[in-house]
Each structure stands twice: as structure tokens, then as C-alpha cells.
Image: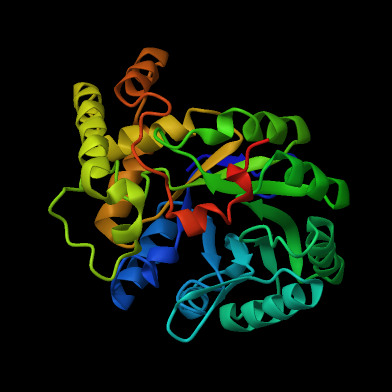
Amino acid sequence: MITRQLGTTGPHVSAFGLGCMGMSDMYGPADRAESLATLSAAAEAGITLLDTGDFYGMGHNEMLIGEWLKGVRRDDFVLSVKFGAQRGPDGGWLGYDARPSAVKTACAYTLKRLGVDHIDVYRPSRLDPAVPIEDTIGAVADLVKAGYVRHVGLSEVGAETIRRAAAVHPIADLQIEYSLISRGIEDEILPLCRELGVGITAYGVLSRGLISGHWSAERNVRGDFRGMAPRFQGENLDSNLALVEAMRRVAEARGVTVAQAAIAWVAAQGSDIVPLIGARRRDRLAEALGALEATLSAEDLAALEAAAPKGAAAGERYAAAQMAMLDSERRG
């Protein structure tokens, strides 16, 4: 496994990270034994970056990872944790809380659930509109000084917020959606991150399975948040799956799967970008890791972009209420 550094100040990590959300939440029921086996398979393959959030399954994901960590050397892994999202007993979303006191309380609970004495990268999951980003990042910086956190990250924030946060404390990386059909960061956010030395951990590289090559219009999404996502609905879905078939033709001509081509495309956009693989099963993980062996030329990458042109995706990546929470999507 080759490694990449998260920005100019962050840790060195595996070229791909493992996004663990689906092992606890959002995509319907998950299998505990298979989740633990997938974590082990990822480690065996050389993946060192594990990404989670304290709101994934309302703490379940952190406890799952904490259980798994008991059988390995903790310092072999970089734990990236998001905080701030508030949820009720029914799993519903209640908003965000990134006040300094809430930041430090969330960190305390995360350390306990993970069973560790420090978090490698700690980041607010979204911008709390009621709290200046300077206050939130200042609280994380306090945790760095106290030894509970090693590096500060951001998630789904726009250029102005990134610049303000970086003025408070060095930012290791920005976690944000980036894929062949979600390329909004290229206009302003990615250039600024490169100017400031902030790395990118790219989630949604397969657009939550939409461009994995495995999705179909007949798939049952009961208990799965994708059933409410605009890109997975009605005519939008039909249009987006047509893009996938165009990508499939390009990928198969190069001897790779659609998923491998899509992941390889993200990885090829710069050595400062680390794709997060959202696998919760070993077979999906193995397929995704095949992207490491995919050698796509500049012509191949251009062919993929022609198959799924920038801006061609039908529908927003989240429902309207969630889109409104994305500082990264604000214009002007």
C-alpha cells in the first residue's frame, strides 16, 4: 500500500481510507461479524486510515471500531472522527452543535467509545451556523494542546470558512464529497486547499453506490437514506444510470470494473487526495482495492470524463434540507 500525507501538516496515511459509516447506519441493516471481518481485511491490505463519526449509529460505529481495535496495535492506524451532528432517539436529525463546550464533551465520549487516549484527526461534521468557525476550531486546538487530538480537520465547508479556520490552527485535511459526478470542489475549494496546504479526503467516490456499477432501478431502498436522495429517484435515477453505462463501456475496455475506474479517477486527481472506500463487506472492499492496480492513462481519464461530463448528474446529492446545511454548496 502506498501512502499519502494529509496536507502539509497532517499524518501519513494509506492511499485509500476506509469509510465505516455503512457498518452502523444509513444503508440499511449491517452485519456485525462481516463489518469486523472487513476492518481486518482492510488492515491486512495496508489501509491505515479509518473514518467514523460519533453520530454514526449514535455511537455504535465508534464502539464497533473500538471493539476491533482491541485486537490490533492502535498506533498503526489513523482514526478520523467527525462530531457535531445531533440526533434524537428515533435517529432523526436535530441540527448541529459545535460550541466549544460541546466539542470537548463530544471528544470525551468518543475517546471512551473508541477505547483510545487520542484521536488522530478531529473535525466538525458541518459548519454550525450559530457558532463562528474560529470558536469551534479553537476548541479543537485546545484539545490538540492537551494531547487528546493530534490534527484538526474540516468537513463540507466552503472556501471562506476554510481560510478562516486555517488562520486559527493548521488544517490537515478537508473531508468532502468528490467523484466523477460530484465535482463542485474543483472550482474554488480545491484550489484554495492546495494554496493553504490542506489535503482532501474524498468521500462518496462512488456516489453512495450510484456509480459503483452494481446499482439498478429495481433495487429496494427501504430503511436506506438513498431512498430520499434526489439522484436515486425517478427520472433522475434513469438518467444517472445511463451515465454509469457509458462509464461501464470505458471501464470494461480498460479491463477494470466501473467502481475501480471511478475510484482510480478520483485518486488520479492529485497526490493530495485520499479516496475513502465506503465498503462494509469484504467483497466490495476487494473490488475497490483493485483500483490501486488500475493504470489509467490521461486518455482513459478523459474518456471517463466524457462518459460522465462535469455537471451531467441529475438531481442534487442530498435532499433540500440537507443541502441547506452544506457550507460547501453556498455560492457567492
